[in-house]
Image (cartoon, rainbow, N blue to C red; front, top):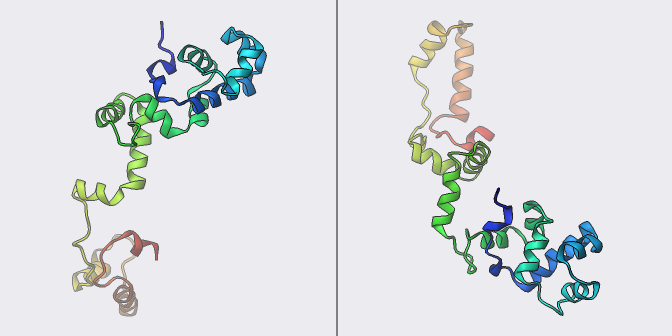
Length: 190
């Protein structure tokens, strides 16, 4: 039998307020008659559960979670509490590295997770990634050299630069905007 999405959650990590919010969401989404049917309780008991007069115990919470999707669960309790309930974060907010590394290991088998992880890494750790890969351009500086002028005049594949005036114009632009500068995101955006 396939495992249900909520079976991996540690329900003891969800406080009374979260439990009531999940129950209230289920009632708003599916109606009280459907929730009464799923929970197998009376209207008065449901009222007591919704108003915090009776606790939403684990048994009833599991029945409520069967009505919800993982996305709905996260939208009600929040991403941080979802991660606490899943065991990735501890209650004090520190990361359980063993669990986090297991999630990262899943990227080897899940193409969507791999792409999301790569996109996040590039967007948030671009410079760190370049350094790790040894492609840092921090020690490169642009210099105009006569060999580049020769290239423009003689070895350039398409239209060679024949005019000395054009070479002088290119040289002045280079010296004004690029000479002795290092490649960087800021330089390319100006």
